[in-house]
Image (cartoon, rainbow, N blue to C red; front, side, top):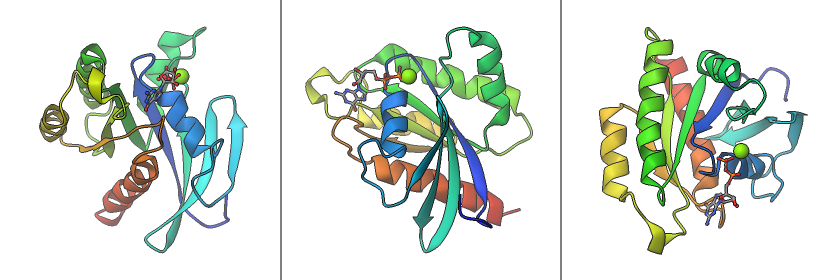
Length: 178
Ligand code: GDP
Ligand code: MG
């Protein structure tokens, strides 16, 4: 990362198959749509410095939620180490939406006293004919859980850049209010 710029750990959580790794790959620039280099730090850890609103911030994106061998330990660990979270569900899968609410509650329990930036992400917005969760439901859920909301399509790369810029803005807001 660029020396001197602050960095934040952003953790992807959510049901299997909702698109976490596809989002991480876009962040990593496998299909390059952003304008800086990415360092792959490990199998499921990506670092990238983003210029947002004229200021650079380094994000370390962690996509280890589904690590098979040590699942329980990894998930507890994930709940502790994030400076910010992307809770991902698929708009085509209501169960994944319900799981997102559970994860929000779990996160609140794990980090009770902290005001952690979170974005609720409704992915697969390209699959309009398979939609099971409306935009209004997603938005209402985010209001209840006091977090931001965005619908994305990792497949057609819609709103993905906006998602990562959004989480950068959220961590800055928390930082600046301290
Ligand atoms: P993960 O288990 O949460 O990491 O999900 P993956 O990133 O592995 O994605 C699961 C499947 O959904 C793969 O076949 C992806 O190609 C597909 N997928 C991911 N994002 C999207 C999307 O935005 N739209 C569509 N149509 N498919 C997607
Ligand atoms: Mg994955």
